[in-house]
Image (cartoon, rainbow, N blue to C red; front, side, top):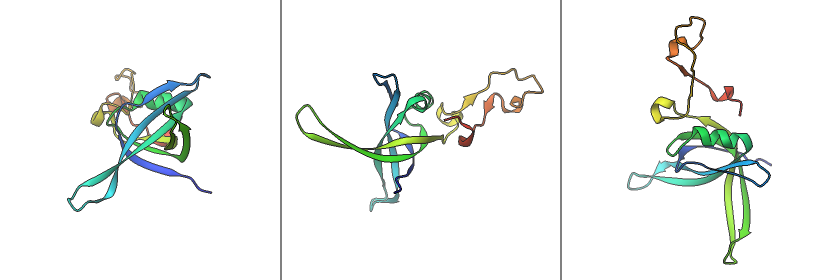
Length: 143
């Protein structure tokens, strides 16, 4: 069976970071993903997709991404249900994020890239010509 989801969109709000009773970090949020086609009025409809990230990646995601950030997520769809306080059965569908990517530089959104704090006059510094900015590719991230 295959259950794989890859999405690109913008965060609709800051990610909510919580901790379970056992101490595991869990972050949740909503990604606004534009549809590829336009309506008769020339507008693009948007899907609002809920997601969840667990453990250390949840903390990293919450620290680096904020409302409006353009992000790529990869994971799987998961469904669950529960009974609310009114006794009604509530069904939830969400993406369980396994990987994520920075899709904008810090200069374009104010977040999403790492800064190097080494002195810029050191000629052996590999970042000396980048004015302190480090271009990190998603395959170089530890999460």
